[in-house]
Image (cartoon, rainbow, N blue to C red):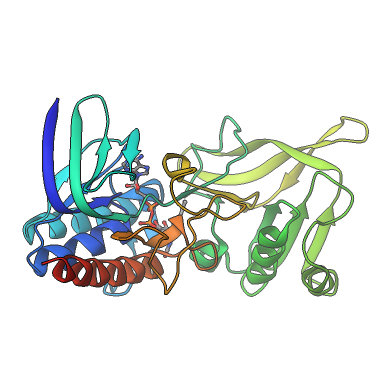
Amino acid sequence: MKKINSKLTILGSGPAGCTAAIYAARSGLNPIMINGSQPGGQLTITTDVENYPGFEDPVLGPDLMQNMIKQAENVGCHTYNEQISEINLEQYPYTLKNNNTTFITESIIIATGASAKWLGLKNEEKFRGHGVSACATCDAFFFKNKKVAVIGGGNTAVEEALFLTKFAKEVILVHRRDQLRAEKILQKRAFSNNKISFLWNSVVVDINGNENPKLVKSISIQSLKDNSISILDVDGIFVAIGHKPNTDLFMNKLELDNEGYLIVNNQVFTNKKGIFAAGDVHDKTFRQAVTAAGFGCMAALEAEKFIESKK
Ligand SMILES: Cc1cc2nc3c(=O)[nH]c(=O)nc-3n(C[C@H](O)[C@H](O)[C@H](O)COP(=O)(O)OP(=O)(O)OC[C@H]3O[C@@H](n4cnc5c(N)ncnc54)[C@H](O)[C@@H]3O)c2cc1C
């Protein structure tokens, strides 16, 4: 079993982890970053990113993240392509480990992100970034004057549908029940928006499209009333059935809210000393690369203060 000691371990290599790594390395903390099973995080599964500052033209998500990891390495962060399966926060210094390696560390920045929940359809992954999305803030712009479907019935789905009306010419909200779960105020806004229509008691059973270029053309919808299948022509589909924060490791070890997100004070402090959180692992409001990066910066600056204070 390999043992690696560090003052600061950054768990996760999405925008939050990479930004924390860049700041911590530049302040001489010799941090390490554990990349996890998805080096670069969620943006590696998308195509064009148009809202991350600094790029005149759209940048591909995987390219952006490869550059961020490289930048962290270039300023002195050591990165490990490993996934952590166990963490001990009872004994100090803290330990994180898997079958190969034990990481012993004085402080941790948790940047394990969140995963959008998907429908689990055969073609969903194939068309991701080509008409299938889980983020209207990120992708609505690509659907100007198009017809799109939003799947879900909670706050997120209604907020996504309302946001999409700024761009799309028609938004169809497909929901498995006959009423929305979203807050009444959101429901009122959605019902009074003439670009939004509703398909009740319905589930999406397939996504259909062209191969070359890869583009969504329609979705197959099953009625839960009579099981009949119909085809709805759309240019895009936004899956809005929720997110799951990647916090299983921290259950009963750190304070989590009822949806499993890490609870933070003052932006980045968890309830344990020397342990900070950054990005989608605690932020269920903004969920953007640039906000995750901002939290990463804050967490690194606070980690630096913490390590200094121990001297
Ligand atoms: C399809 C899609 C398109 C998007 N498009 C945009 C966009 O255009 N613009 C925008 O601003 N935002 C976009 N987003 C949102 C954006 O990707 C997220 O807000 C951002 O990636 C969050 O960054 P993060 O660093 O907090 O976490 P993540 O990017 O989720 O990264 C989490 C990291 O933690 C690691 N990890 C998890 N568990 C472990 C473990 N046990 N051990 C070690 N490592 C672990 C993972 O490997 C990963 O590296 C999109 C999201 C999706 C899903």
